Image 1 (spheres, one colour):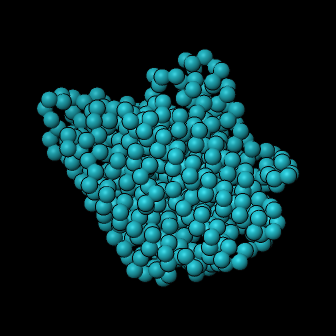
Image 2 (cartoon, one colour):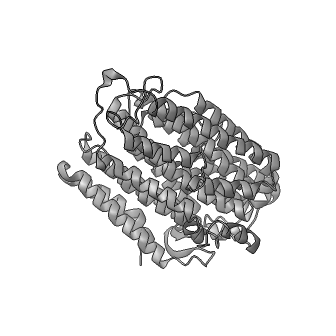
Image 3 (cartoon, helix red, strand yellow):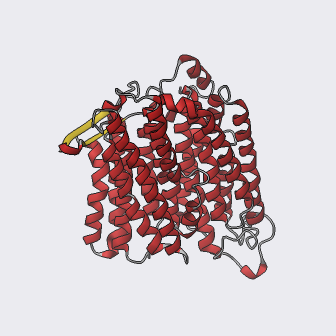
Length: 493
């Protein structure tokens, strides 16, 4: 069965169908295709054995033999949660799009093709194939920002394109160097795993990947494209950008950096832990200074990506589980926050925290939106009972033995997260709603449902983290001692 190919090409071929279909039905057709893609993801779950550590449901065909470019797809406990996240958030992005969006026969095909290319990157087992999907997703994302973005969309889209193009060049250089220096001439991941390089060569190639994927994540100081892209992007595009697209960088760093250059990784790990501290503190402190709700959430993403880098630097079984959990929880939480910020902007016409007041007013405000926002910021701040708490606990628990003071400084970042999100909630949702605003338009159920679904998943994973950990622990080789620590969290483990 070509299940994995379906995850890649069903959205891509569906994009072509939507582009040729009458525009009045573009949204419904795109949503139906995304729903089928989600059903395919469920079928993958049924065929996936969580007890196996290696690649499963493999699909492989020769393509360009001279370049060793093979069409080779596979899935394991690292890529599976991200593929599920991509399918879920793709559906939500299409559902939450404006029903009166201009040029729907271009907009929805771009969203669908973006879903397919991202799935291809997560599933690719050939380095050149990964690179192709890694670069292809730039095209729809650039157009989505440049055409349907805000006033400065041209600047934000071009900045995004330049930064991520540099990222692709560096990643490709590392892949080419790996195939050459290994003496195999192969770009097949499984082959390269069996041919480790000398330490000096590993350090050079790993440095290229750290900068290349560091731009995509993004890590400080390669982060400046992200706030601009988020502020100018529409809400559904921000959902995909924060929820899925950033994870291409963390996934690439984990799969190819940590996976292929283990000796060099141990050498640079202390520097990576320090880099993580800088990212966490910089992102958090900069978020405190923001007055635009969307920009504040964007800088929070920069801080939370630092937790992933810390966990990868430690590279203990528990911290690696925390890495996957943090990628998924951040994707869900940031998507929910961007959805809610979008609703606030739509109803009030502003995201300025110097203007917004009293949105929790039950008679004239947005009480349900405000309540969901409180849930989202609590999850992001790591309040127990939420997915954000579990992911941060795993990251810190798995990292503190390796990097104690770096971990403590990153824990400080969770406190700063509480500070800037409390400022957001206090300024925008408490206080007295301005009289000249009258009664704000009530949020509809179609606007609430996506955030409600994400909030429910965030709580479920916070109460029962084993529902996610179960799929990844064999791949990341969780030892019995670490498993006993996690089991205290949930009887499902």
